Image (cartoon, rainbow, N blue to C red):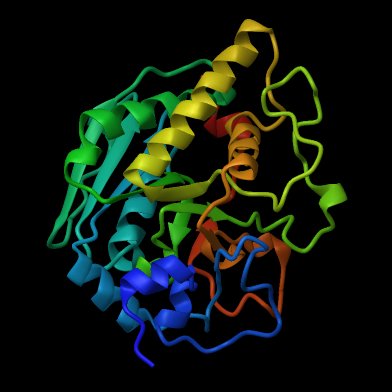
Length: 293
């Protein structure tokens, strides 16, 4: 039976079915609202890539390299090998020191823009204020030439395919440290005075990776920024800053696609049989050295 893309959308059939995937019985592969959870073995990468090339998909990647971050070269070089290979990609590097961003040799259909931003005294403020910066650059630039946006922390390295199977209207990532735990362990903001306050949720999402269509990412970033600023006016700061606000937004506005922890793994967690591949790895974080003046 042939199912065209219009009918597939109406029926809300997960795209990995359309892409001729196999199945996984050891992990949750679908949310209660019928959004696919993307794991190795759940999709055919060649068909995904062919479909997105035909549809003219293009991706903007935003990353913040502010202060003493030393990961920019590793992040961008590894992205050239693994991130959305075969699709047009525009890098947006936000930094307080553009002159210190190392030269990167880019492949075909890849461009890089460096945008100078203010350096805040606390890494928490850098983390929270990125939402406004992302919203602004989507409005001024990205929406004119990219269909999708992905936002990353810079202290990570790509180690495997992070491809078109990850593209969707609204894309969230399962946090590697929480996906195996009961909801009672999720570190949602529990302060009723904060706009990020949550009693419960669906999953715990990691703010190190999020994305979607430019419209959806712009809506998320604007809402999180507005809530952050309202908290500031009330002398409140959410427990995990922009990540707390992101979790609240994604609880109220369900993502259409969820990425498994393969898409941002920490090797310090140790062996997990359900992690068959790693696509992006955390770098060792030393906050006292990397995120202070």
